[in-house]
Image (cartoon, rainbow, N blue to C red; front, side):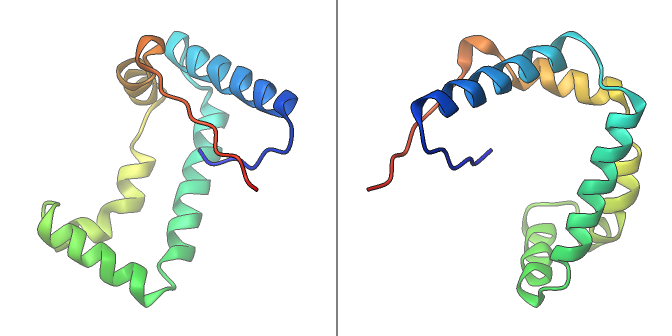
Amino acid sequence: MCLSLHAAEEFWVVEHDTFFVDRKLRAEPVTDEELRRAQEYAIGTYAIRQQSGGAVLGDIVDAWLHGSGLAELGEYEARVRSLTPADLQKVAEQYFDEGVRVEGIVRGR
């Protein structure tokens, strides 16, 4: 997550909100509507990104070198749509560990 903040109070609000969301995702699954909206967003932004030749080339290289092969490029939408609320909760439980949280503040000039 990348946020631009202009005051210390705004940082506290954002930090507090992200901490709450992380904790909520670990405790209970997202609703079907939340999942549907997130899936549509992910699929839509991916489609927009694919309009760039550089992005397509990067995806081909990633699939070839680090993935399971070029066939995975056509599987993105189906893989995103196959996710369930339980899948997301499992990932949240694994990666949103409150004890291993790292935060940083970058200030402008």
